[in-house]
Image (cartoon, rainbow, N blue to C red; front, side, top):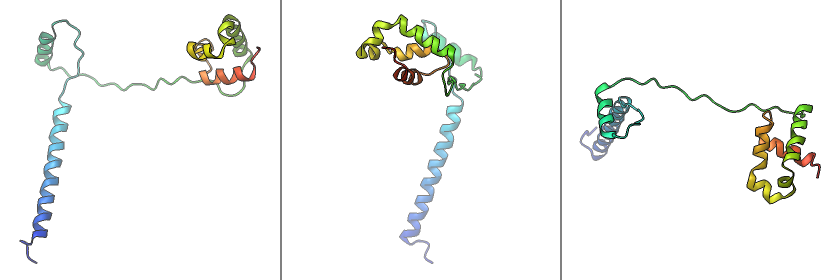
Length: 132
């Protein structure tokens, strides 16, 4: 085999480029890990940035918890239906006009009152039990 063949030179160049890109990624990861992320709350930002750089304290990273609300499934309870009827009575003017429902985001407000149901569940319940 001829090691100086252009194809082998191309392969060596390609391997070298891959190694260089891997090294670049490793160095950027090391640099990013060393960054301090702190909020600057003072008016004199330059002074606070200098103080933060001098201190070099480590910040504990915490994960955000999934804050999805858990809604009931299935049939509505008597308490939920009673809250639904009370909400309908208090917002009778808005519920009569379909364009007002969208502007006021009425089913979002209803789900805030009926905490165990989502806005889409409230909308579906309203379609089924519309007293008007």
